[in-house]
Amino acid sequence: MSSRMQIGELAQRANVSHRTIHYYERIGLMKPAEREGAGYRYYDETAYQRLEKIAALKRLGLSLDEIAAVIDLYFEDASGIKGKEKVLEILEAQLAKTNTQLAELTGFRRDLESNIARMKSLIDQARQAD
Amino acid sequence: MSSRMQIGELAQRANVSHRTIHYYERIGLMKPAEREGAGYRYYDETAYQRLEKIAALKRLGLSLDEIAAVIDLYFEDASGIKGKEKVLEILEAQLAKTNTQLAELTGFRRDLESNIARMKSLIDQARQAD
DNA sequence: CGTAAACCTGACGTTGGGTGCAGATTTAAG
DNA sequence: CTTAAATCTGCACCCAACGTCAGGTTTACG
Picture 1 (cartoon, rainbow over the protein chains, first blue to last red):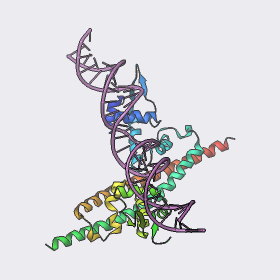
Picture 2: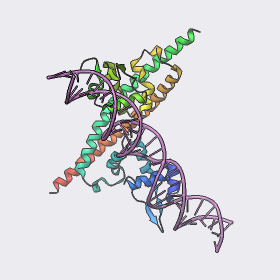
Picture 3: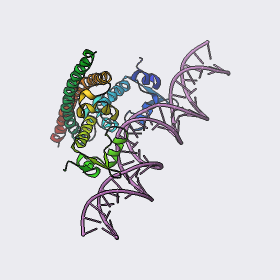
Picture 4: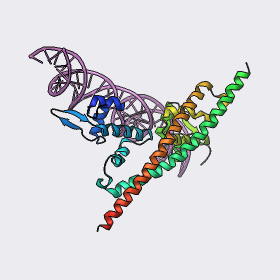
C-alpha cells in the first residue's frame, strides 16, 4: 500500500482490472497517469480514492458520463473548476433525480418487506400442512 | 385507452417501442400475449401496469433479470408462485441491497447539496468581482 | 546480462438492453 | 375488393462498459 504504485497494484486494491483503468483513462474519467521513462503508469493514493468514488457512484446508478461530470468536485479545488454554471445545472438535475430515486427506493423497500412477510407466512403454511 | 389493445397502443401508452415489448416477451419478462387469429397480440390493462412496474424497477437500478425474479409478486396470487424459498432468498438479498443503496444515496444527496452550495457561492463571488 | 514478471497497445469479442430493416402477412377502412 | 396501416419474424446492428488475445517492450532480480 505504498503511496506510489503501478497499475497492477492499483487495480488489485481498487478491485478492477488494469484494462478498466486504461479504459477510464481513454474516456477521460481517470486523468492520464504520470508516465515515467518509457510508458509505465505510476499512481498515487488519490488515484485509488478516485476509483473508489467512481465505483460508489456507479452503484448509485450513474453512467460513466454522469460520473465524469461530477467527479472533479471531489478531487479538485472547486474554484478551479470550469463551467461553473453548467456544473451547477448538472448538480441540480442530479439532485432532483436523486430525490425521486430515494422516494421510489423507499417505496420499493416497503414492497419488499411486505412480500417477504407474505412469502414467509406462505412457507409456514406449507410446512404446517405436512 | 380501451382495455383491449394491440401492441401499438400499449407501446405508446407505456412509452416504449413495440420492439421492446417483443424483446421483453422473448426474455420472459412479459408473458406471451393472447394471440387471436393469426398472430396479432392483444393486451389488457395489466400488461400496461406490468410495463410501468418494469420501468419503475429499472429506475431503481434493477437489471431485467432481477426484475423478472420479483415482478410476478405484483401480478400473481402469491400462493401460486413457484419456488417460494428461492423467491424469499432473492427478496431478502434485494432488501439488503436496497438498504445499502438507500444509505449511499442519502450520502450522495448530502454531497450534492453541499456542492451546490459551494458552486453557488463561487458563482456569486465571480459576479461580485465584475 | 539473462530472464521472468509486469506493463504496453491495438484489434477484436462479449453482454445487456435494446433498435432498425425488410419482406411477408393481417386487419381495418372505404 | 382493394388498399393502407398495423403487425409479424428473423437478422443485423448499436451503445456502454468492459474483457481477451497477441505480440512487443520494460523493469526488477539474481
